[in-house]
Length: 489
Ligand SMILES: Nc1nc2c(ncn2[C@@H]2O[C@H](COP(=O)(O)OP(=O)(O)OP(=O)(O)O)[C@@H](O)[C@H]2O)c(=O)[nH]1
Ligand SMILES: Cc1cc2nc3c(=O)[nH]c(=O)nc-3n(C[C@H](O)[C@H](O)[C@H](O)COP(=O)(O)O)c2cc1C
Ligand SMILES: [Mg+2]
Image 1: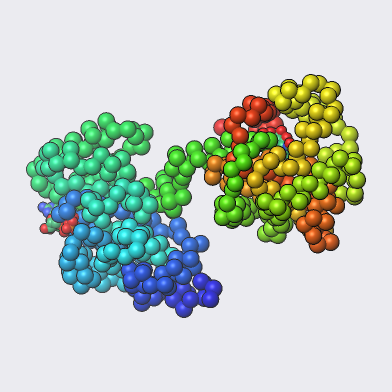
Image 2: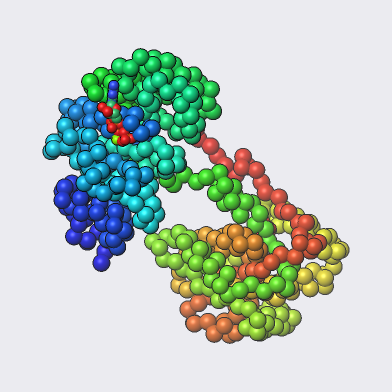
């Protein structure tokens, strides 16, 4: 069944309370429907403003939320509240429900309150919370408030759950203020000193401001508000501040955080791209079929115009590879038998491409000890293409010859994916247009269907680090040489 066709989805998206409640239960129980729901609502997220309210036990979070509910209802909003108590061993819907003292507005038609009895399900508290929040977002609530106890959830999880993170601090904690996890301050968008009717509130607010001043992220001004939740004081200011934050940070901030790559991930992708080079000498170490399969499995995520996916791969090792190599080398030795074949290169060269192409040869051949003009040695080197440079795996890529130029563009993205996925596994490659010189040999040896033609080949294996040509590092033009900029600050 298509995810969107699940009977809960339509009423859920329409904000039907019973559908919402049932969907939450499915998530809490880890029911299979939870996956279906998550998939169906994924495109509908990012409309609600999700406010995470965290802080020490007893700080007054629930009382504050109750007061805030009153204020937001007066402002015409629809609000859902999710209360999470991961630590309580008593946690059971009803018991926790009683604990949440938000009775005053719980019955209002524009308010929906739910306590999460989330213990031990796959993925843990934060995953359940995240999914329930997404659901309430998709169900059309303007504001979703999440109450979490500061301890027990990592800052990262709160960041992925809420768009605005409010940390509630009770006054008079003295040393305990210092004990607020530094990480909590790092992620806070708003600090609230609740119980401002108590004498120590003023000094606590001062301490917090000082801590904020000293921390690592001074550029983002974090307001420190004082509230008396029990009397509703400072609540309008809190609602204003949240509104300001929603406008400044934009909705769906939590979704962007979720997808934001870590520095490690960025470095890993950049490293795979930056370390790829054409390797022309490999170690005899074999590559398991499983690894090749993984590489192709990643590579198939390449985009293609109207999702045509024009690629077809022949993965060769052992005898199968040897047979093709010997046949290709024999054909090379007999001289080219050029058949009508899409041209990879132009018939005659011109600048600036001619110089770049020449330079590659001039740089490569000396490394291999081939003197300039030694045609025989150059041919011998070129012939190594036919043996995939002795790589343990040879890949031949073909395409339906009726496809047009655009499909070759798609194909290039697929090929690059193969090369990067190989890098990510410590493997190296050399893309090879040389195989288009012997399309008839490839067609015969691989029994290609009539409509298939060779795009290129690729050597795949573990690079020989001691190869003299490993020192080759073909230069690239700087960005400025090929980019025209316009409209930037
Ligand atoms: N004096 C004073 N007491 C308050 C204020 N806000 C809340 N309280 C009291 O503080 C106690 C704890 O309030 P809760 O709202 O349950 O605190 P909480 O942070 O939700 O607590 P947990 O969910 O157990 O972590 C209650 O007795 C409240 O009445 C306030 O502004 N001033
Ligand atoms: C589609 C394609 C075909 C290529 N064909 C060959 C080839 O047949 N033989 C070869 O030694 N190198 C071949 N190369 C490698 C290029 O020479 C190489 O990418 C270029 O010099 C830049 O060097 P680098 O890949 O090490 O960064 C090919 C590259 C591409 C993208
Ligand atoms: Mg509470």
